Image (cartoon, rainbow over all chains, first blue to last red; front, side, top):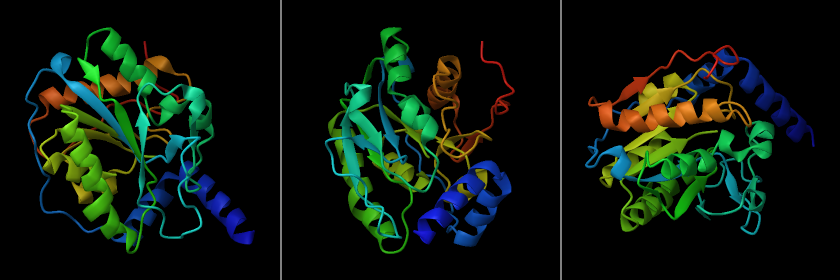
Length: 170
Length: 86
């Protein structure tokens, strides 16, 4: 109970006081990568199939929610059919304030905006599924994410012949 | 999120992500990123702000065609609740 209140206060502080987020990032000691991987665009945007990936904890109401009890988070993901009606989506994620995204999921997962670009032929198509993680992963779950769940999503994107991916955090 | 992005890029698919934390992104080094100085929970801007969400998405997708340097972090000058998206 007290922990829940403390967490809610922390979520609002991190949202409203930008330097706190930076201090948190420094304290976490993210390992610095030497270089960025690179895959070139092979097609023009208007000939490309685009997929969405988010770490904002979005999922179908019919899917099991992300695990909020484990302090190290939940490294699993949910596949969300792209044509899912908005009412069928919900968000399970207690480490950010998703009140805006609860009202309009496009704030974290821009399915409607992507569909508009497809209808205007700015892009060729949308992958049949979007993929959603819960972006608060620590401890042993980092290895699960890097070795199991993120590669599983990458393989699905390859299998669907996706040309490029747009990612959103929380 | 940058870690997931790197895994996908290594499978051969070009990626671009929004970031609200430039320092983390500088360290994790995803291939392409768009930094917005927006509050957590708002990577695409505000609820029902269609023009804002569209501008962010289009900027990112167009950057897939134009960015050529791995690790690039774009910074559009769109101040939170100050910029008018027309």
